[in-house]
Each structure stands twice: as C-alpha cells, then as structure tokens.
Amino acid sequence: MTARPGRLRAALLTVFVAAALAATPGVGLAAGDLTATDPPDGAALDAPPSAVTLTFSRRPDVDESHVSVRNDAGQDRTAGALAGDDGNSLRMPVALKPGGDYTIAFHVVFADGSDLTGIKRFSVGTGAPPAPLSAEVAQRTRESVQQRHSGHGPDWIRSSMLMLNGLVLVGVVVLLVVRRPRKTTTGARWVLREPEDESDTRG
Image (cartoon, rainbow, N blue to C red):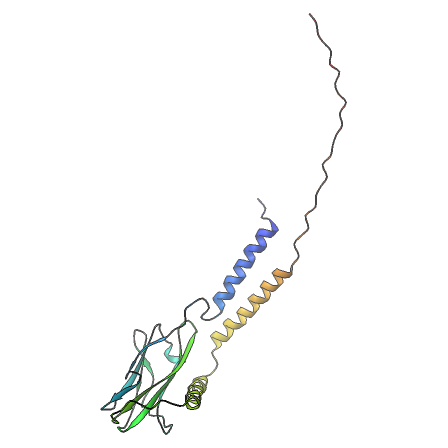
C-alpha cells in the first residue's frame, strides 16, 4: 500500500517539529524556580553563617551556575567553591562579618538548559532586616552575576543544539512551501453496445 503524498508530508512535518522542540533547551517544560534560601530572604541574623544555601524546584547544573555573596560595599565575601548535593540545592561557603547587610546574587542553569537569575538579602548583627536595594543597584547586581557566569566559557553542547534547531526549522519551512501535486481526473470511457436481438422461442 502506497502512502498518500499529503499524509507523508504531514508525518514529516510532525517529525521535524518534534525534533525542533527537542533541540531547544527548556522548551515545553515549566521554568525552574527558587523554593528556599538559607539564610531566608530578609532575615536579620545575630551571627554570620558559614555558608548560604539555595534550593530550587529542579536540579541545577553546578558547573554552569554561579552564586556570589557581597556586602553593601560590593566586596565579594564567598570563601570557597560552589557545591551541589544529591538533590536540588547549591551551597556556597562565605566569610562574613557582623554589622552589615549582604546580597546573594545567583545565575543558575538547570539540567534541561533553562536558567534563572535573582537576588536575595539578609543582615548580620544589625538587629534589623536588610535595607532594600534600589532598582538600579539590583539591576547592576543581576547583570554582574550574569557576566561572571559567562566567563565560564562557551557551552558547546547548547550551541550545537541551537544550530540543530535552526536546521530543523529550515527543513520545516521547505516542506511548507513545497506545492502539493495536482490531482488529475481521468475521464471514464463509455462503450456503446448494440442491443442484442431477442427472439421468442415457442414450443
């Protein structure tokens, strides 16, 4: 049985679209989110913690993620390498001093290729919650952590996937512009036959 051209084209389009979605990082999946921080956002601590921990709704890629902890003078107070656990958390060692406000800035890449950027605040030894950052300072902080993340170098896997996605989309466009073959109608032949002579047979 031979497949009709229309059905074959529809099947090929389905394959190409599915491949395009698979080649695009994070497509079709809900975005990852920050679910908890330690210290909590807005916390007023009496003593400085030895590390900050961020927990997300999905598993982060430790090698592609970046977390910084800074005081209000902009000094980085991290004291070690970022580490993950067997779940969805990242842990960054810090060396903090009492009597100041601190900002946690993060740019996290998840295992599916999607990412998340954000900032959280806490204070140590001030007896009051941290003062909120101005919109300008908050934006600069986000941009700074993203730039530091980009220093990890190019992600060849994601670049290759994006290139494959582009090729797949080109294939979809080509299939869409291909004209369907026109149907031809073959006229039916009519054959005229002379009526047969009928004779009565009488016994």
